Length: 201
Image (cartoon, rainbow, N blue to C red; front, side, top):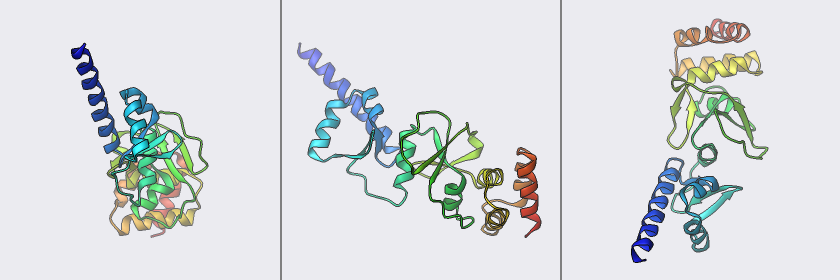
């Protein structure tokens, strides 16, 4: 019997290590789904009681040892989607420092997963290739070129797109050859909008 108890304890400790590793990818955030998958319900319940785990939202928790940071909201939603999401569109432009779009919502492109019920998040369903995303620490963000392309395909005004493209080139987040090359993978409308943005420089 002692061997069975030790085996259960080892399994629980292994599950806790796995959960902490998952949380570590996203600034300490993790989901109740991950808790169930790792078998850590008892440990997390105890952590909520003693304060080492805090509630971050419906279905979202956080290890209290992680300090608050300015990009926590991005990390939290990346955890919700198990890392299968990237900050994109206007939100990515803001992170890259290109344009002055001042988004009212957080835009995320998501390959899979159930979106949360929140008015704050705009979820765009689409797969993203590895060349279209880059790491921003605890979450992924679309590359500057992919961001420019996404915005050309969206409904932002031409003047706003011109500013995004001008900023991207001015601060060397990408160059005009990259933008022209990317436009060939886009819709005719977006390609024309990008051509106008480049000639407006």
